Amino acid sequence: MFILRLLIAALIVSYLIWLFNTRIMGKNIALSKIATWVLSATFVIFVVLSGLSYLVEGS
Image (cartoon, rainbow, N blue to C red):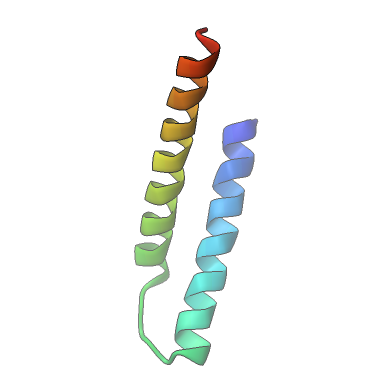
């Protein structure tokens, strides 16, 4: 369930970034490209923090 919340939050952030880039900045960037980058960054952050938690807690 935690991963699902993380995925939904990442998609909402992706949409907000895409909206800012298309409306305010005037750039023509595909939503799928932004969503891919945000989901990749979210996954990497999750893996790093999970790894640190495993090293600190030891289980």
